[in-house]
Length: 65
Image 1: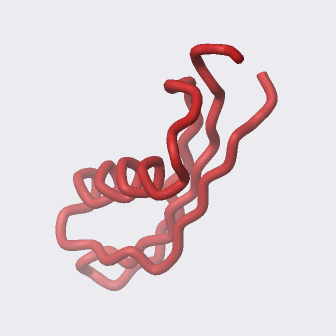
Image 2 (image 1 turned 60 degrees about the horizontal axis):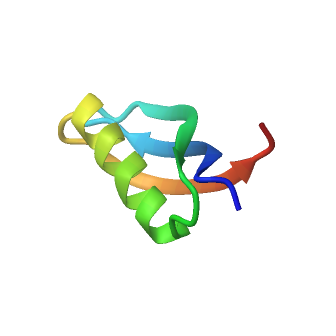
């Protein structure tokens, strides 16, 4: 089993001003991380990028290298 895995994520947010924004990210992280752990991280990053935003939807998946 490889030590790392490629992941892709999307988070749909509503900014404090009411604008709908989709934040997309992909990268390599440790293998075996749960979906909940990944979602927690990408949602936190989206909130950091857009202070005061609310999460409307989020999804994450493993991807082929």
